[in-house]
Amino acid sequence: MIDFLDPQKGKVREQYGKKSSLIGIFVNVFLFIIKFAVGTLFHSVAVVADAVNSLADAGSSVISLISFKLSSKPADEKHPFGHERIEYIASSVVAVFILLLGIELLKTSFNKIVRPDEIEFSFVVVGVLLFSIAAKLWLYGFNIKLAKRIDSSMLRATAADSLSDVLATSSVLLSTILSPLLGFQLDGYVGILVSVFIMMSGLNILKETLDFLLGQVPSGELVELIDSYVKKYDGVLGIHDLVIHNYGPRRYFASVHVEVDAKEDILVSHDLIDNIERNIAQDLGIHLVIHLDPIITDDPFVNELRELTAKVVSGVDDSLSMHDFRVVKGFTHSNLIFDVVIPHQCKKSDSEVIEEITQKIKEKDKNLFTVITIDRSYI
Image (tube, rainbow, N blue to C red; front, side, top):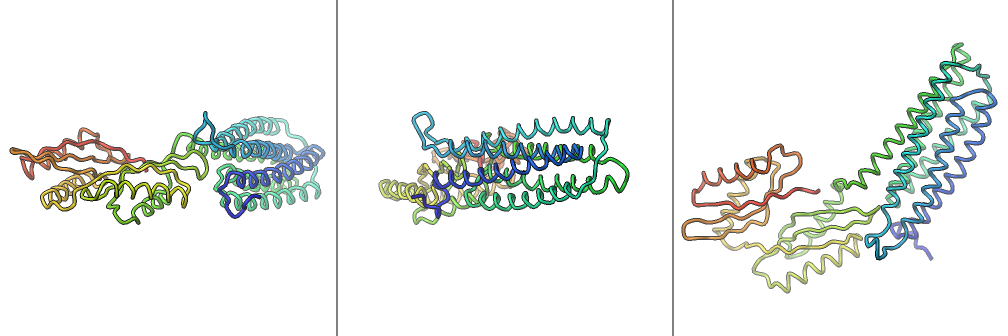
């Protein structure tokens, strides 16, 4: 029996997706039939364009249905991270299909402006369009609710498409009412407007799904969630080098460096990170790999130099941060070995950062040498 109280389980996602897709297919095919018939009967290219848009939405629901089925497949030998990214690929296919449809409708609407047909006003047309608007508003609310419940980019795209359809159909309705009153055929112009709505919807969906496929910065909420979860354990002094990979909705693999007291028994520290890895997988569903970083906390000389170096680093650019600090003492000089994280918004080059930090530390004490490794932020 499927546990619908846990919407992140594969079968549950599949059932939610199937439910949304089948309802979407039924509603959109029905809307296509009545709008296409009415638009053809009353010679309205805008209504026909809106009808074809509904047919495209039905096609999107078919692709959605297939993608939810395929993405719920468990990991296998060739795909050890699972198949959930299929949902992103399917969303991209839908987006391209919508774009092509919008371009075709743009051509048709332009021809309608060049060679306009007389449009017969009918309360039947108005009634059908009002019904379509109401149906699309309901679909929007239905899909956005399910999208939030299972964190689905496909259903969010479907919901957004329904909302854009409401605006597009409202424009067609306005044209149908105003054209006879103004004595001017707005049909072709509104058809162009509808096609633009369709293309914009396709572009927005494509951008969102490509961001997921290319690898985008994880949300601040997710970063904070992992950060606070790891730091709540006694013995964890800090974390850095957090990297998060997304392999589908709510399917995350991550790695992080955890700082612990160098004096602590290595077996105790190892047991600590084992517990964190196991517990975060159970509690949050995140597959986390932890690298252990022992740091010295009780050496006044090292602590003083760490504080000095941190001030120098932030003084070079307040967006910079450092970690993995250690000191190798010598008879004539001491080496300060540490990593500096340069975020993407920092305009300085790696060499400029290293040179400025080295120079400023030399100004503090000429017997201090730096060994700096540059890191990048992935969060």
